[in-house]
Structures are given as C-alpha cells and as structure tokens.
Length: 287
Length: 248
Image 1 (spheres, rainbow over the protein chains, first blue to last red):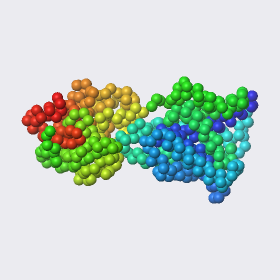
Image 2: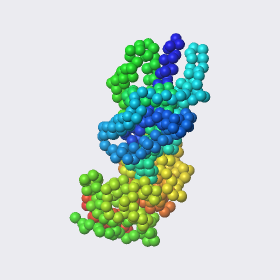
Image 3: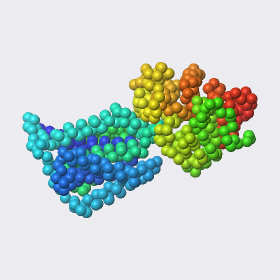
C-alpha cells in the first residue's frame, strides 16, 4: 500500500508540472493561436536561471521563484516581438516549425556548454525533510510543489476567467480586430500573454530543479507528454488544462503501480481515445 | 451614372465644426481595391447616413476610418488631426467609437463583461445607471452570456458599451439589420436622443425609411465612391434619384 501512495505522490508531482506547462501552452494557444513547441526549452531555461542565480550570484531558491519567471518571460516577450508576431494569420504549422526550431537552438546551446548530464540544485533548507502521515512518508518539498503549483494554476484561472484583464484577453482571443477598435492595445496584450505563458513554464522549471536536477534536455523529455495533456484537455481551455494535467499525472502514477510497462504510454493511449471520441478535447469547444 | 462627388456636397448643419473629414479615401482588402476615392465630412452634432446597395463600400468606409482596414490612402481627419495612418486602438482612444454590423458581442463574456470591455477614452461617458435607463432590458440580463441575448438586446448592448467610453463620435454600422420593427423603433428613439444630447453620429444604413427619421444629411455610396449627397430637407426632391441608387 505504501508503494501505491508513493506512486500517487509521484503522479501528483508530475501532474503539477504537466498542469503548469499545459496551462502556459493553453494560454498561448488561446491568445496567439501558436502551438508553442519552445515551451519545453523555456521550462529548462527557468531551471537553468535558478541554477545560475544560485551558483553565480548566490541568490537562492525563493528569489529564483520570482526572478526566473520574470527573466525567462522577458526572453519570451522578445521572441514574440521579434519573431512570432510575424506569423499572425498564418497556418499553425508555421508557428509550430518556428518554435520547434527555437527549441532546438536553445537546447543545443545549453547542451554545448553544459553537456547532457544533470547539474545538482539543492532543496532549500526550509523545505528539507519529510512528514510521516501514517499511511505514507511525505517529503516536504514534494508536497510544497503540489500545493504551490495548484495555487498558481488556480490564480491564473482566476485572472483569466474572473477579472477585467482576463475578459480583455478572452475577448481578444475571439475577435482581436474589434477589441483593438475599442481602444485596447492588442499587440501589447499578446506580448504580455506570451510572457505570462513562458513565465509559467519557467516557474515549473524552478520547481522541478531540486527534484529532477538541471539538464538541457529536461524540457524535451516532458514537452511531448504536455502536448498530449493539452490535446486531451482541449486546446486553449484553461481549466481543462489544469484538471487534465493533475489527473493524467495521477493516472500515470497509478499505472506505474498496477502495470508499470504501460506507464510511459498510458497518456498517449488516452489521447488517441479522446481524439476519437471527442476531437475538441474533454473541455474544448468546437472552432 | 451620376457625377462623382469630389467634395462634401450637402449643406453643413449650421454652427457645427467639422468632426470628421474624409478626402480621396482609397482602400484595399489584400490585392482587391475596394474604395476608389471616398469624400465626405461630418459636422459636430450631426447624424450623417451613408446609403447604398450591398457591397457598395459603406462598411469598408467605416472600417477604413476606424483603421481596421490597414491598407488605405487619402486623408482622414478627426477633429483636425490626421488619423489616416493611425492604428485602430489609437483612433478609438481619440474618441471614435465603432459599433460593427455583426454587433461584435463576445460569446466568452457575459453581458456585464461585454458592457465594461471598451476602456473609457474621455470623461462624460454614460454611467451604468444611465445605460440601464436607456436600455432597461440589459439590467436584467447582466449575468447572461452575451450571445444568448435576442438580436435586439445584442444591438442594445453593442450601442450601450460604446456609450460608456465617453467618445462623442459614434459610427453605427447597420444597427437595424435583422431586427423586429418594434426594436428598430427603439433604436431610432435612442439615436434621436443621442443626437439631442450632442453626439455626432455616422450611420450606415440600408433601411432608408429608418435613416430618414434620424439623419441630417445623406451620402450615397456606389462602387467604392460617394456618388451623391443631400440634406434631409432635400430628401423629397431627391426621392426618385434615391430609388434608382438603392434599387428600391
């Protein structure tokens, strides 16, 4: 039974990363109509940013949680302004190819300088150790990742679904031309939205660093699963991405316990089933 | 074919300064040349109506003034300022409000969110209470999804949300399209009231009978050009010509 709970916890942690990353992808797709294949590389940059802050400047984990998403978010905004904005109105394939190319370049550069093996990033002192819950042992840092990710996801959902700014974003997703004709600077809003999505990826990277170590290909390993999560949840659906991210993490964890051989493929089997039964995803709307 | 107007022909309403002046406006959708030299002006406090058949270029004229059609040449002046190269968001912030033909109600927003979407661009816009006084139906539907409203309510919402902004120059594109006569009458009363309160309105209409109840002047658009123009007082004298232009 202990093993089952341990796998459930692992599933929840993976689910946290899936949720944060797929949320960023959903926000970017919803607003920019771009399938951001660079998301994994930007997640990796978040982890490296935390690593550099600690090892070059002596700035620890807590500040890295704030600085890394902002720094990588700014990098994302520069990408959007200099490259992605020119793809407006073109087929999705162009955005996918461009961001895929960006991902390869960024990952290649980091691999060139840091190799493929992981660099250690220590768990902050405040989050070391664990708690005995009776039925299982809970490492505090892992519990923190799950709770913090959930809070960030819900805060993002609240921002988009329940605030004035979110209403502007949703309206601009539907009809950017008219929103602009109302006096709202839509290009600037798109840039900031891309920055927000990228910032979420970088935040996931910082959270991941103490668990998975810091590796140039850490995002490449994850991004395919995250795309499956987004497809299952429904492209562009905010709440769909959050729920599906956590749920698929848990399903993956349970599969590791009951039938480990299928744990790497269960997400993709589910994706195929969802695409066959409901092509718009579980919570997505038809275009 | 009547002679093409090269300048605003109808007599201007006494006392009103020119709010909008459009000279030799040409516009393109991609490679397609759609406006071929539009000329007209709107004075302060007037309701000016662009008339014409389907596809004549009326909506394209409004969209060009609003900056929605990016590829355009000619001169567009709003309150003396050249806006012919400005982006649509900066034109809106100067005080030009646009109510599109298809109403532009956002499905992902409820009525309140739709109403509050356009930012305030100047002081003096209508408060929510004033809007509910003008359109009482909206008050009861605040929490409803915007596109769940009836056609008439959607049109009221589309007009109401631009009245909040404080803009004093309104461009209304076919506000009566597809509406029941009783709703058309209500929209007519609203436009008349706005005119009385000093709003300047550029109206695009195919419903000539409706336009004649509110307009001060008319321009007739055909094949992307203004081909005629007259004041409301000259309407009777121009009726035969108008029937020919509009094919009614």
